[in-house]
Image 1 (spheres, rainbow, N blue to C red):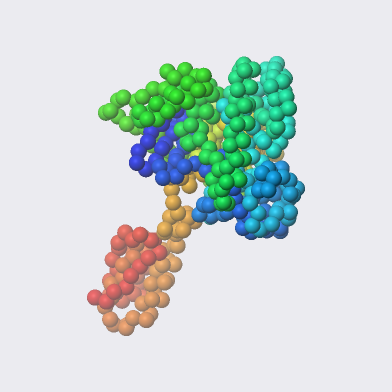
Image 2 (cartoon, helix red, strand yellow):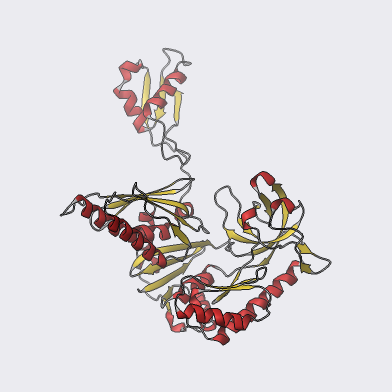
Length: 480
C-alpha cells in the first residue's frame, strides 16, 4: 500500500492529510494559535466532586474544567510536597478525592462541544517503540504483533526492564527492533518521567508540566513508523524538522519530500479539499451504484447501506452480499476520514446465508486493521446490524469544518412556510385594517402566501416582498 502524508501550513493552521493508494483516508487540523491537548500532562486542582456521577471536575488552566471519571482513575497522581513523591492517599475512587487536591492528570480526549477535556490519572508517556506507564508495573506487547516476534519482544522487554519502576507496552512499530534500541528508549522515557516529577513540585496548580509533541511530530511518529510512507510538505521548516525526527528514529530522511510545483498548491494537486467537502455530505456513492448514508447523533453514529442503482445479476442474496462487501472498505475509510467514534451501528442489507454474514464480519475486522484507533466489533445481528465501538480522541471532521446553522440551530430542519405565514397573520392583526404595509419574508413563505392569499384573507393594501434572509423564520412588517 502506497502511503503519503501531505503537510501544509499557513497563517491559520497546520493541516495533515493521509493518502493511501491515492485516496484520502485521514485528515488532521491544528490551529496555529493552539497546540494539541491530547497527551499533555497537567498539575490540576480538583474544583468539584460529583459522587452521584462518580466523577470530578479538575481545573487544568484551560477555559473549561477537565472531566475526570472514576473509570479513568488508576494509581494515585496526588502530590505530596513534603515527601517529594507521589503517594497513594486514596484508592482509584472519586469519593476519596477532596476539593482543592492537586492531582497529576493527562488529557485523553480533546474538548467536545460544551464538554471540557477528558482526563485520566493513568499516565502514559509514548515513545517511538514503547509506552511508559510510571504508576503501573507490568509489561505487554501490542496485540497487532503476533507469532514468534511477540514472544521475542516480551522476553527482551523483561530482560531490559529488570527492576525499573513502572510498566511498559511495546508498540507495533517495535517489530524487529534490536534490544539496545529498546533499552535506550526505556531509559529516555524514565528520564522524561523524572523531569515531569521534578516540575510538579515547582509549579502551582493549575499548570502544564509536559507538552506532548505537536501535530506534525505525532503524525510522523504514529504513522510513518508503521510503514514505508513518505512525507510531502510545502513548508521548508516542517521538512527540516521532519528530517531531524526521521534521523532520530533511525529512518531514512529521504522519505521527506518538499513540494516544489509552485503552479499548483499541494492540497489542490491531491484534491484534498474536494474529498473533505464530499466527507461532509451524508450520502457516499459506491463504484457499483450502491451507496452508504452516514448520520451522526448525540448517542451514536448510524450508517445505512443501500443498493441504490445497483440491481445485480443473479439473486437478491448475491446482490446484497456484493454491495455489503463493497461497502465495508468505504465505511472504514469514511469512519477514519470523518474521525467518527463512540458507538457506531451499521445497517447492512439483509442476508440470509450464514456464510455471507460471517464473511462480511471477517472482512470488516480485516479492513479495520488499517485503522490506528482501537475498535471492537460485535457479530452481525439477526436484523443485519453490526454494532461497534471506536476510540474517539479527536473532534470529528464535521465539528472541525462546520458550525451550527443559525437558521435551524443545528436541527437540520426549519419551520414550514405555513407556520411563518400564521405568525405574520397574527402580527398583522395589530395593524390598522386599512393601513398599507410591506411584509418582507423568505421566498418560500412569500410564495406560499401568494398562492393562498384569498384563503388567508390578506387585502390588496398588504404587499409581500421576497428577500434572502439570514434566518428562514425571519420576517419584517413596515408601513408604506
